[in-house]
Image (tube, rainbow, N blue to C red; front, side, top):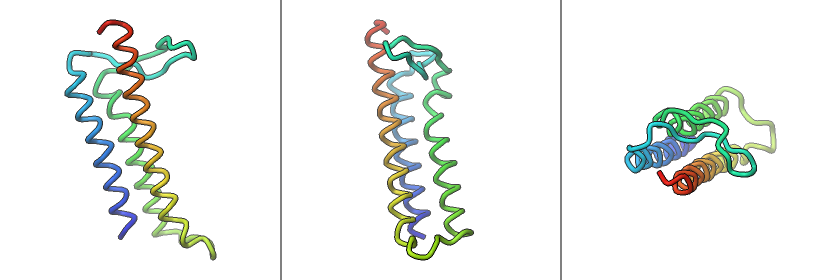
Length: 113
């Protein structure tokens, strides 16, 4: 049960970041999705798709891991690692989304949007 609660928690946090960013960036039609090392944008996506990409990916990943944890029990001696791994992956998705939103803001500020 704890795994489901944790997966839902991270899903809500990521969706909250996306909804907030959507409100702040409502004037932008497209948002950058990928950058070269020099900061040049290589491609962009429609705003709602760009903001939903990471939360949807996270929800699919966390849901898959939660389902697998119930259908495939961990190996002996690894029972205590399932929850920390799920939390670590959730935190990783939060950090990735925050980085993506920071890069978007920096790019838009640099381009004068």
